[in-house]
Image 1 (cartoon, rainbow, N blue to C red):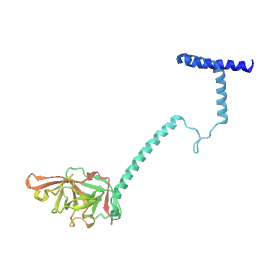
Image 2: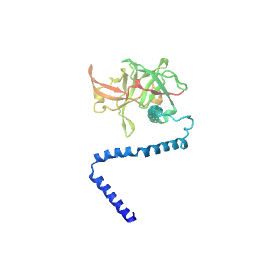
Image 3: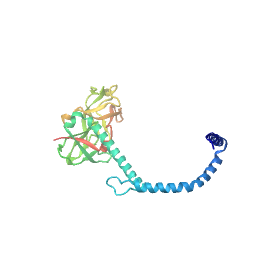
Image 4: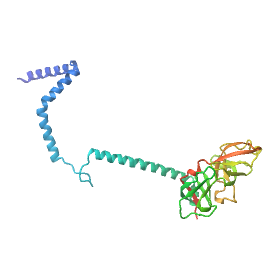
Length: 276
């Protein structure tokens, strides 16, 4: 057959194939494809066997360093599951450490005078409020030593190495009212308050309604002004926030001022105690 005749036949076959691809439904071509695969088995099977033999003999890979064999897919899947759990655990630890570091940065120069101490337990009774600390060296364990956290004063050490919180019913602090102005604490010029703990919060009942009316409002802060019971280093530091102001039910001329810390102090994981 001449080259021109072959080209003509080849062209006709190509056109028939193109026409068949356009005109014949896919359902018919799929059935034909299955039969064509069966026809090609005598050719495909030996070729695959030869390729597998050559790959197994000449393309063998050595196990990774430290391993004697290649692990199965199930073994790899199990190891990946363990590694994902470890990554999740380490990620949570890293986030917690970042939060602790961010909290400690709030202290600034105070970290030169106070040392972080882990809390090992808190008093859960409704009226008592205290913390037990992990035994730690380098801190002042004498009675009356101030204890602080990121948002202010926590309380002070009492007998037995416990921390009596500012919310404890046996805690009374002389204080002043203030508020933040452009990041600075500005006192409100009110008479000194006697802040008494009631267990989970604090109350002020020694000021009259007339003295605080139009000046004191919820959100204002309460700062330590008690040189008799608290050391100089914590004077002027906040320890609570005004939650409400109203006339005292039993004495309407006096104000009942409810003060709360920014968080439940009995849940603190760590506090700072004055160094020796």
